[in-house]
Image (cartoon, rainbow over all chains, first blue to last red; front, side):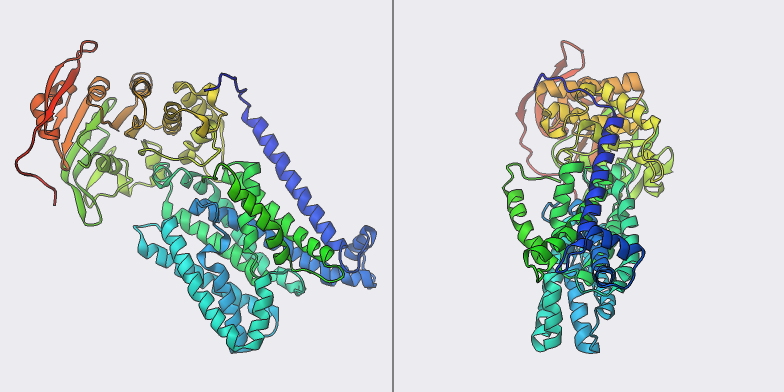
Length: 345
Length: 269
């Protein structure tokens, strides 16, 4: 062992450092929000944004900011927050660094329910099929949990959950593919949904998903200490007085609400939930009480930032945020895989 | 006796491993369970630590059914360290030991002065104060095992169950861990139950031994009572000579040969 004496830092010092990082991430979210309000086909200077927000006069910049950019920015922050936290929860529960929030069939459940609602009910507004997307996410997740429960003893294990999630996702994807091949309108919606975007949504959409995200975040934070115990193995967690089944159930409920709300509103963006927790873990270490907030804020900064980038690179057109994230995320992911020490959770 | 097993049947699924066993753990002693691989000693330890629910019979902690007590309440009285536990990458020694305070925390009170003191005591007891900020995966096997024991200590329980705490350690580190166990009994008044494979270390560091074979207790008592040539024969099919340990006068096993058994008489169903 090395002889170098490591200075024992008091816990207070560590706490100050963690709060500083938390503030820095909050600032990053704010910067992304401001950029998202300013940048676009028609740039709006900060002074005009300010005026549009607090004393609108009905001018063109006012309308652009209030009707187009505020809704997509709000949705981007909410969905990024939700997917960042859901991704960290999912990787913690499965102890798998490659797990994304869609692993439990949530994404495919939402997709199938939305496609079905278009074909059967001829719904045409995003406003309408978000509810179906949420319901589909909940049903798929419940089915996966039940299957995972049937396969194991007592509490579902990460392995049975991942297997059940993969099976249910593949099944639902097959159903969705069949339906969209037969129906042009469903195909159009599905193609747009699959790319993943926060643009062009009604201002009511953010309000619609807000309660689900709020409840999901509360459950996620309540889940953090349990996840810390579970990270030491199920036997140690039980020895420390944890109810394993309850901890897992809480976590899955939070993942379902957060991911279901985000993908129903913005489409298939689960990739952000795969990469953001890795960034957060580099800053927070393995303590989920800090990892979850870090991951949420990083997601809330990254998704609007990707959306802004999509407006800049394809100017005067736009590239969907989901496409930008995948383009930027893929190299990051390759770097992650190539890391000499594989991350153990 | 604070921890007892009453007529417990233990197993996984339909595989019965322990078929009706009674046991009491003397308070303030170090008790070691010995026996061949697959004899049910780890299974018994898991049941005593309420990690495994008996198929029938019950485990009593302070006279109460341990499986009917709230798990968190048990966790304040009884600590369990499973075999070869694994920690997430990057976890520091201090963070690991702090997680031992889990049963004493609630969502509205994450960290108290009591937690801080317990963690510091546990680190001091295991000699890890200087390594507190080091990541666990940078430590040697012996240091890592001490860190895990330190976590169980920070839990602040009177009873401590250790499943093979010396596995994968070299001899010096094994002795290091067992001396720590003795100090836990002598200085902190803890009751320790552990599973060990090394018979001579078990005899030297235990007040009581429980020898098991095929899910039943063959002999229980002091090392002098249990570590005898007939018991070794019955438990391990081992022909051995038992002589007094020249240092501690505890029984010292000198193995001679494995005795072939003509027929298996007692296989568990």
